[in-house]
Figure (cartoon, rainbow, N blue to C red):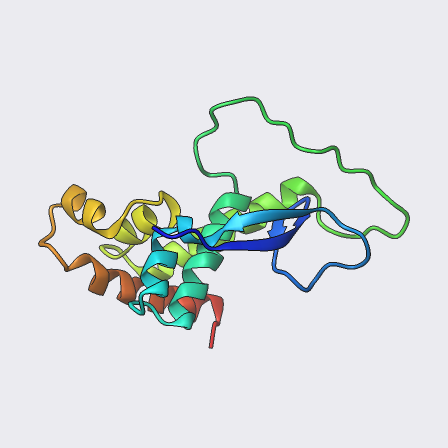
Length: 157
């Protein structure tokens, strides 16, 4: 898989798309080629709408911190400033979990299996097909159906 490196602004919520930085900020280099859906998108198997839906779902999965924790958490301490009316870290996590659960529910039963495995767990489509006991080359079609429903949930046009 080829490396596709992009510079993104590093915020307390995670990497943000380029072009949104104001003044001096910290940046991080992200390899967008690591994701199985990025691999499918780069080869023309997923259109932009489905790719964005998968990335939105994976962002909510990561913000909700649903993956297994294997080490101590080193989250930065949030300092409240004057006029700061944003959500707390816990409220952001709960909101992301609610959106993630809604996206899975929108995909529907039967489609959420491959959706979670490929988008969130990072499994390749052939590995997910084998794990689920599906015939070869059926996973891509089912994944497209699931991502289409997730795109509707996130209102991605």
